[in-house]
Length: 105
Ligand SMILES: [Zn+2]
Image 1 (cartoon, rainbow, N blue to C red):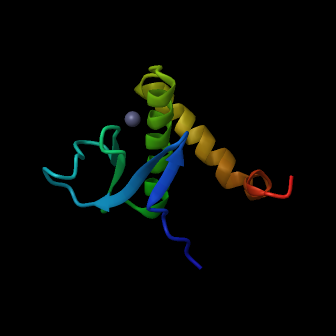
Image 2 (cartoon, rainbow, N blue to C red):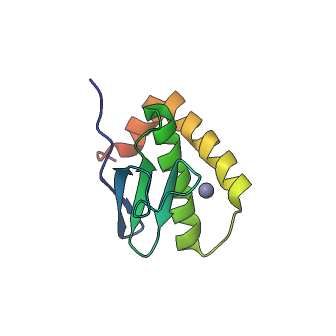
């Protein structure tokens, strides 16, 4: 059963909307697969990219949110590398993800 992409992601007290959009002036997308607008608290993903690529793009944009919230600048190449590594760790370790989500203590 396919899991729907969440339409909101909470990051350190702020809720970012996550939307799938078509390319155009209003989308905010330029050359990438996704983008983040910190003022509008919005992550926009290109509707034409494959689901696997979209997942990686959301992780990538979330890292931009984290660097924005932390007040640092990791640089695009570092964000790309960390997004790929984090995505791989999360995908390869569902038991870890389930354990992190456990509310039992
Ligand atoms: Zn980026």
